[in-house]
Image (cartoon, rainbow over all chains, first blue to last red; front, side, top):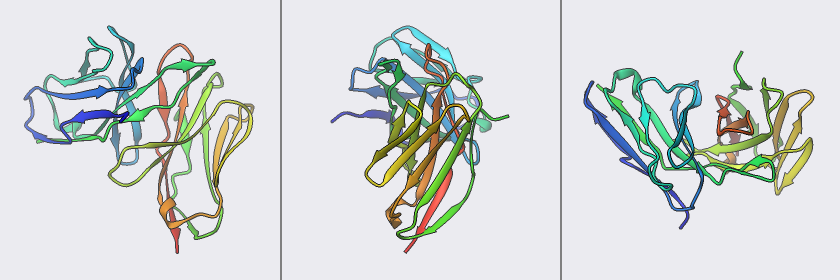
Length: 116
Length: 112
């Protein structure tokens, strides 16, 4: 089954304790992204990647790191989490650009992170 | 000014009615437009993509794009209670990157 898999689904952690949220896709997609979703603010892009070893900042990259060492994986790293990073996080992947247009994004199940 | 704006709602329509959802965007060079549906606590799922001016129909859903006016809309005909969800408008603003911007979403309730 074609899917984007995130882990963990739920995480409660303490301020300053490094954590990693994993994301893996099995569709051989070029593009991958991380979003956070907060009430009233919608989905905001944190980082995106257009290929292995190619990453770029989105709207809200502060406090986050990413890496793309393999095509299928795109982990999100919070080196020193703070309470304002409490949010619902989504990983997404897409084929990229075809026919001059971006293709649809497929989303993971989401990770609900609480930082206390 | 937000890059992608949606009427925040909530929008409530009776079962069988037409629901109309609107979205405007600020980057005139945007090329790719999407409507996603998100049920509470779930991940967004694609309803429709649209790339050219005009209408695109898929079952009960019709997307409309007007690049000159910088708006994209979604019409849901014969609305069903199962259509009750938050609808997200998304716009890819740059052909050369993966910078996708989302609106804040419109919550739709279809009442039986």
